[in-house]
Amino acid sequence: MTISHDAGFEPLSRASTAELIAERLREAITRGRLSPGQQLGEASLAAQFAVSRGPVREAMQRLVAEGLLRSERNRGIFVVELTDDDVRDVYQARKAIERAAVIEVLRGDPRGAAARLRGPVEALREAAAQGDGTAAADADQAFHEVLVECAGSPRLHRAMRTLLSETRILLGELEEAYPDLREQVTEHVVLRKAIGAGDEDLAIRLIDEHMDDAVRRLLARRAQLLVAPS
Image (cartoon, rainbow, N blue to C red; front, side, top):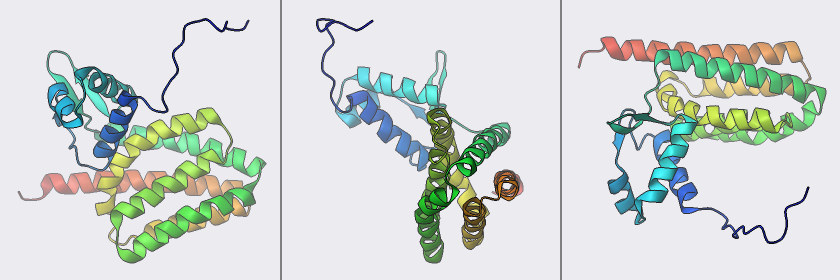
């Protein structure tokens, strides 16, 4: 059944105001400019963006659905605070998605995937050489998003993008958990090589180790901060 030409739909712009606001808020959260637990006010944000409160409300609800904001009844909207259990859950979910992605990649074009992963690896290598933790986190995220893209599964990619928003918050913490950024480079280089070589067992083992290592580092750093003198 087709939709008739007179169904009354209005033309859509490339991006709505709410989408643009959501994009800016998402970036501010994942870059740490909005702190975990910080309350967001509709009126204040509307004034800053020079818009009405409607698009701001819609944008915040989108980020609530993504898990970047949380809504508390009779209190308001807050930037999410990821607990230790959240850390474990995020990386466990990523492990499942990236394992599935690796299997699909190796059934398809592993050499092509390895070629596409070269760019993020080189960006990570350059960031490490410059001691730029933020750029290293961006390159890290790009590597894993490209890996899942190479699987050719829209659903895996959609699930991964949601998780990467939460992961990007954690990568800010993880920057401090790597005394030497070259360790991150090595982890991604060996994973890329395993994928290019079509070695499924090794690639999956490296994915598991990479995710488990991130959880260990994050939880160890949090525990260290708890006992550190104020």
